[in-house]
Length: 194
Image (cartoon, rainbow, N blue to C red; front, side, top):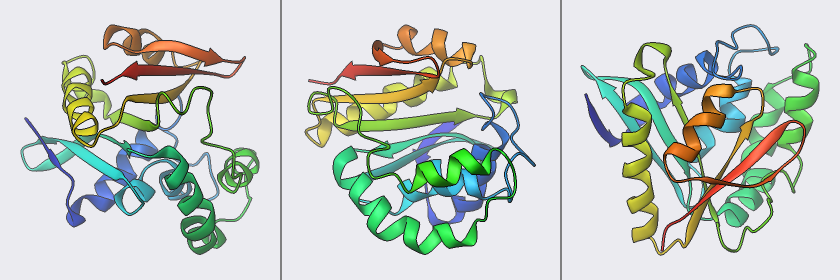
């Protein structure tokens, strides 16, 4: 088991991991009109956008998890709505109830703008396949990502987790994140890096 930067050959595995963990940590297969929509919003753009990074949890040469995100949420959000989504979004049509919230939210220019963004301008997403959870991989991925972002001069990082994802709600405080905002659906966690 190793942590390594994602390469071009990891694109499909990253999209698959996103799908298999996309329902509050469980499998989201079939919840959306096509099984690539979730990854096109929450995973694969980070392989292409400004400030993007992706570290892969590699087991025997296969990606079994990742931590990905951007060092600059504001720049990434602009790129996402101006370049990425206009190209990728038309591939996805509203066919299911979950499409009716996912697809419009992807086009929202304020979607990634969270409280205290100036203090915590980076953001990340972390996902591990079920057979890799509870083994310390998540902690190792976080501890690899934070120095990477700090080396880029980023003062802090945040992430947003669904309240219904009990595992995430208990995990992030254990790895140095503190809740800084929230509503009935989600909690925004942040961690200083400087």
